[in-house]
Image 1 (cartoon, rainbow, N blue to C red):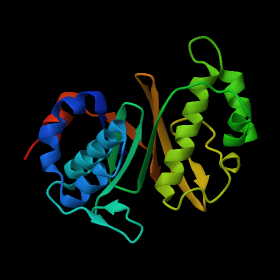
Image 2 (cartoon, rainbow, N blue to C red; image 1 turned 120 degrees about the vertical axis):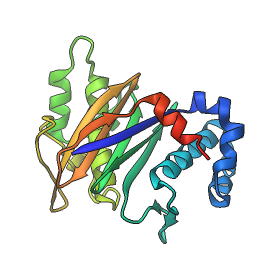
Image 3 (cartoon, one colour; image 1 turned 90 degrees about the vertical axis):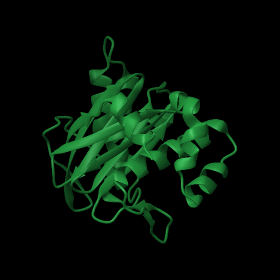
Image 4 (tube, rainbow, N blue to C red; image 1 turned 180 degrees about the vertical axis):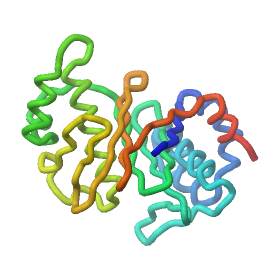
Length: 215
C-alpha cells in the first residue's frame, strides 16, 4: 500500500514563517507560541501546516488527550532536527524520523532487542555504520508503536521489528504490521501500517511547499 510522505525543512520554513503563521487557527498558534525555542516553534508550525494539508479543508479535531485527528483520514507526524514529516495512508499509519547520531553507551542495548543488537553489529560495515543500522531499527520500532497508538506497552528491548525485509510481517500487541524505511539526508525515516505492507512515496518537495502555503 502506498504511503504518501511529505517532508518540510524548518530552515526553509523560517524564511516564509511570517506568511505561514496566518494560516494557523487559534489553537495551533497558541501551541506554537507556547514553545520558547525558535526551532521548536518552527517544528510546531510545520506540523500544523502539514496537518492542514492532510485535512483537505476538513476540520482538525482533538481527542481527550489533545491528540489531533481528522475523521476518516489516517495520518501521523514526526519531527527531528531540521525536519517535520507527515505520512498519509488508507489505514492506521505510524511514522518516525530521527537524525542519525552516534551509538555509544548502554542505552543502545536497552533500546534494541538482543537479536536487533546482534543484527546491528553484524551489518555494520563500510559506509553503513552501526549508527545507520541502529537508527533504522529504532525508527522502525517507533513507527510501529505510533501506528499501534498506545505508546510503549513494553520495554523497547522487548519489541522486535525483525526481519528487515520490507515485505515481512511484524507481530505486535496481537496484530500484524508492515514496515518500510528510507534514509534522507542525514536522517532515517520509517513508516508502519496495520494489516498492510507499506511502500513509501516521498512527495516532490516543491509540490509540498505549494500545497502548504495555499489559502
